[in-house]
Image (tube, rainbow over all chains, first blue to last red; front, side, top):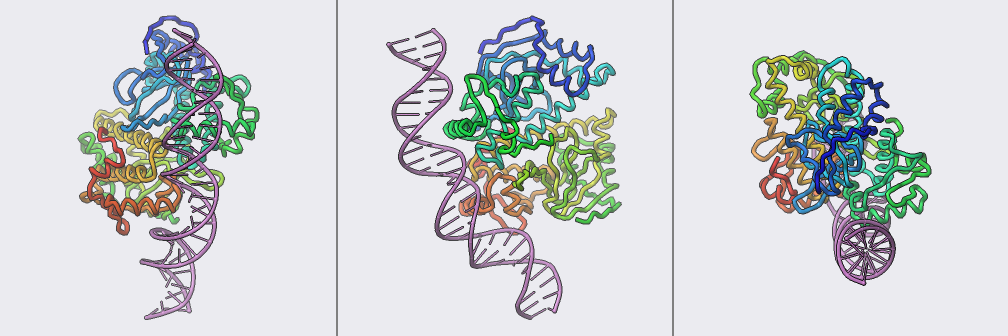
Length: 239
Length: 239
DNA sequence: CGGGACCTTGATTATCTTCAATGCTAGTGG
DNA sequence: CCACTAGCATTGAAGATAATCAAGGTCCCG
């Protein structure tokens, strides 16, 4: 849970840059604003609470590792509302409840410079603002998808659908290799995302493996046939 | 599904005004912006699609009746992502997918004047903007609650929790009478909100009635003991 | 070697869905 | 006025899906 501070300037913002570049052609001022975030980089141990959503505090950009926007009921039941990947920014208004917690060890940066560029009206950040709007829209869409997954899909479909969402998101952040991606989630975390019990997640994953839908190795998952998985997940291609 | 156009100026914006007034003291210019929306009032039959979320088109303010932000899977399963009440505005960016459909007969107004006042930076609309931010935040919070309901709550808790959310929202819009409120949802609609089957919703409602949690009469529901319902719903008082 | 975190398994139970009727009520047209 | 209809609510029975309970098993790390 220790929090260390670096001032390294290594290119840790690659995921965000890849994601935004796919939406609008970023200029040098945009890249400068993004990279300025690395002035304040912190490491968080797995399980650490990064911030409480809705309370004051600067937004943070995830550089490495996975986090989760989580809500916990008084009796301990936990729901991960949204998984947060490298390149995602957390803590921007409008800010509801819950908290952002590190699911793995995590590296985050101060997103204030980015937020300032986006919220201003400087002409040199026009492209950045356009890209940012699209990112916000995608975030909303993910929330919509999460509601539909939880409300109207079976465990098998839910899992398949989430895998496809994460593959797409990591792909757009330049974090995939063919159809393979990092998979740091324990089955307990996955259960908290999907609204299922651990045991049932275990059996569902086994079923997906037996069906050849996924290949799961320590810390990594491969989806041999995305088309096929998309069919069983009723994945909406028009996105 | 007919769409009629009025130019009446009767005070149909009461729900929105009540909701906003509870958040910041609105001034005459704010009220003028709100009431200007009534230049273009339309009626929609139950079941009509008001707009597709994410496509271009002016936002609309709900004056009377209930609507739902809905998503439909290719195989026909439907999920109501969020219930929309009088005083709510739909179709503002960031706009994900899905559509807004009338759940009852509905009266809506063009929300463009309101949107303009909120998005500008005119000093006379400072209070309006503050109130609007709070409204946006509340909307996000509702989405968070919906995810947790669907992911981690039993049918009984889900139903109770939704009832409390709707009671609170209608109360803030000045639409309740003691602990009673309009209840125009069929059990099928409720099932689509809660991610349950119709039959199970029927049985859950019966259970709530037998337990004295709710009193349901045609088109209206009363919650005799809000405290008690809040306990079984694990309703978070700190909101 | 012990411990802890994570994964897996079988058995049992609870929750929820599906299927198939039936009842109820309000509106419609003869 | 009354059959007729359509939409909605209700019921029982059966079955699927998922949760819970209780052990083990594996792997890594100190």
